[in-house]
Length: 349
Image (tube, rainbow, N blue to C red; front, side, top):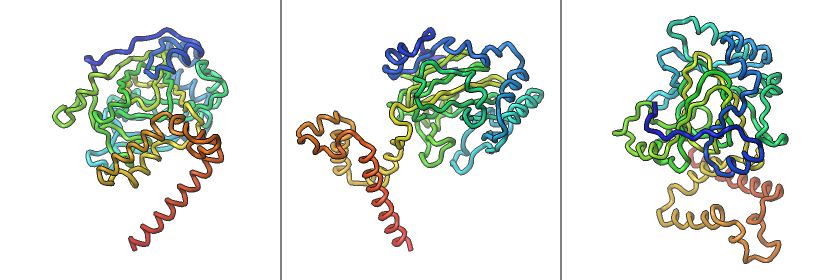
């Protein structure tokens, strides 16, 4: 699979200083072989599926987590109907112990149903597992989300995530296909308001692409990377890199560490994109070009150069973003949006 895609060159385990200096700063995916091989849950790979699941269940509480469930006919390809009117799986709720029991029961079925529990927050569902999965590459005070992904054979649709991610395989093997963010135009994304888990997904079947329908995908493949992870390996996926994940294990699992480079409470820039759909996209071409210059000057250019001519203290909201500026800006946006929304409601009536 993906035989013509360039593989990532593996790196040996690193310490935090090396990770921050050489890997994180470069902003490229990196495979860290054996980075978490000493975790107790990784050492269970010589054990049976039941022993592995019992280990997880014994560290879980009774809080229900979301489980995606589907008939075997989807072959682990969770997604939408062709017209995006419906999902091809059901969303259910079950405690981690019950999810493990369902996966174990499916081992005896000749055509097992597809089951996948993603982003199971360890703080909420498996607090006793947290001490067993330390992540020394992140600052201890770094706000992060630590989550479990577990299921049987699956093929997650090509997608992107906003946070940086360290994906650590703990059971089975996982195969990743990765694309840099600048390939967005070549990946044929679906709608941004009809998503599986918050981010738009590619409409391309990466395992059997239709180059007649999606011709630019060939350009994306030319710069793609692929990598296979064994238990104990960690993969650094920088923010907004597109990735598809394939797991062929009857029970596979990974632990993900998600974090933002800035304050974790910062609004997602996706909000800006949504706002721009309202305010910018349908303007005449000459106006859009004018606004492009404004954005390049104030947002994408050097922020200090944009205010260097101003007297000290006169930059206002163009200067460093303070909590006070955040409140002022958010109040201004709320006022504008509520007023615009109410006006549209009156017009609709």
